[in-house]
Length: 286
Ligand SMILES: Nc1ncnc2c1ncn2[C@@H]1O[C@H](COP(=O)(O)OP(=O)(O)OP(=O)(O)O)[C@@H](O)[C@H]1O
Ligand SMILES: [Mg+2]
Image 1 (spheres, helix red, strand yellow):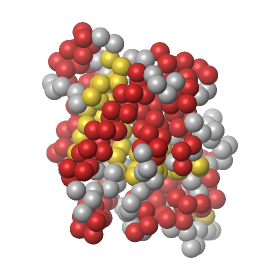
Image 2: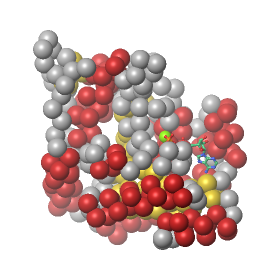
Image 3: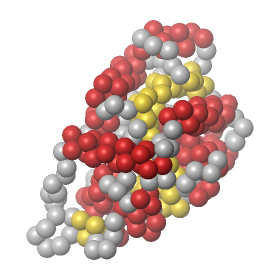
C-alpha cells in the first residue's frame, strides 16, 4: 500500500472552520453540511440516503458523501453502484510517489465528473467499497476521496452545495477528520445501552471538541417504553424520532430505496420532518 501524508485532524478542523467563516461572511447563509453518525446498524444509511433525496426535491444541490467502505447509502439513494468506483479514474500514482489526484483535477471537477448520478439530481461521492481483497483494489479512490472531502469548501462553486454524509459506525470517525466539513451531526440512537453509549460519545465529541451543531434522532423506536428507555440511557431526550417501520426492510428486500418503494411510509415521513427541522435551523443560523 502506498503511503500518503494526510493532514492532521486539528489542521483539518481549523481549515474547515476558516472555510465556514468565509462562506458565512460572504453569503450570510450557512451552508448545510451534515453527517450522520451512530452505532452500527442504527439506521444511518437509510436516513442519510433518504434525507439527501428529500433535500434535493426541495431544491438543494446535494452531494451525498458515502464514507463507509461497506455498502449502504447507495441502496437508500436508489443507485446501482458501478463495479469500479467512478472516483478511481480521478487518481494516479506516479512511480515512487504517493497517490494523488490527476493533474488538472480538483474537488469541483471530481464532484462534477467523478461522482455517481443518483435520482433527483443527487451526486454520490463514494469512498470505494471493500471486497474480498479489502480496500487494495480501490486505494486510488480512497485517497482521492480523502483529498476531496478535506478540501470540499475550497472551490467557491461547491460552497452552495448541500452535503449529506454517511459515516462508518462508531464514535471514532467523526473525530478523525473524515467529516471535518460537517457543521451538523445527526446522531442516531436506538433504545439499547450500546447504541446510547456510542451516541453519548459522539455527542460529547461533536459538542465539546468539534464545535458542531447536533440533532439527536431516536431510531427504530417501537413504543413509549422504547422512547422512555432511550431517554434514560442517553441522559437526554431526542430531538426527533424515526419509528421502527416494516416498510424500510421490505424496500431493502426488494432492492429499492424506501423513498421510491414506500414514499408515504412512516419512516420517510419522519425523515421529511427531520428535513423541516434542519432547514428551519439553517434559516435561524443565517
Ligand atoms: N426506521 C427503520 N425501521 C425498521 N428498520 C430499519 C429502520 N431504519 C433502518 N432499518 C434497518 O436496519 C438495518 C440497518 O440500517 P442501516 O444500514 O441504515 O444502518 P447503518 O447505521 O447505516 O448501519 P452500518 O453501521 O452497518 O452502516 C437495515 O436492515 C435497515 O433496513
Ligand atoms: Mg451504513
